[in-house]
Image (cartoon, rainbow, N blue to C red; front, side, top):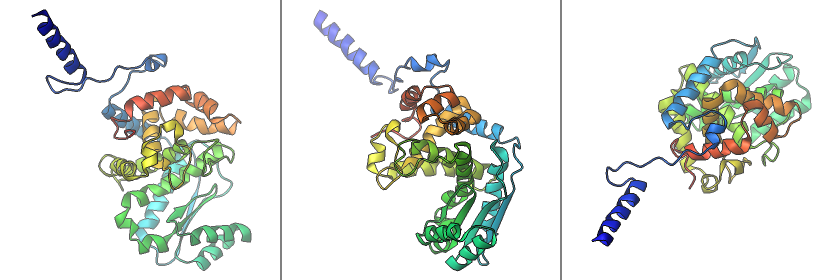
Length: 323
């Protein structure tokens, strides 16, 4: 009889530990790392809500009078031109960074010759202008720089991206402008394809979060129903290797490692906990000569290794589980 009772107790304990009985899954214990920073492990819904609220609160203030100049070749869809104008202006004026010496230039081109002539007429040297043509020739819908962004409308139109990838196109103006801000604050540093000095999860994740929130703020793409789900789908359908890595291992930006979606989730979580300014302050700390780990600690107040541990605890609930 004692053995039978003992078995019942043992089974009850095992069922409680795995969500048996009432069918509810018991949450994993909260690690001590949260208490170290006076934080409590948040629910997924509170992370998403807090991140959005923090972005809206931060961008409610105009911090910069940086001018934006958009030049579009005849034949470019007016919708794209409006998205570029509005998205770039929104980001350029809401963040605190050293003002560019001249209006930030967005060029939307259909053909290489018009692109070349436009850059030269805007005061860019022939080598600088030719470099844009070379990048344009590779066919990416858009690509950025520290003082200008370029759009390949030939690619956008041929692939009907304003319809088939509305989320991507709508978030790109804010995304690319924010990259220029990052680079300015970081004194010209960028991650590069390998991301050894600055991991691409931070660089691309921050720009993607800003781009999607900007598109939402401009009422082009709703963050909750379109923007965020787009990143979840990208993560789940992306490279298998990316889904098998810890965030600390997401450094590269290449054919086998996609830092955009998982980086977006990490930044969404970070902003929910520390706000926008501290997330941005990491770039300024990089510009002062600090390595990424020290820059992250100075900017956010959280040790990088602790942030990684906290993100590991919540990423599954945010739909970015590690396989």
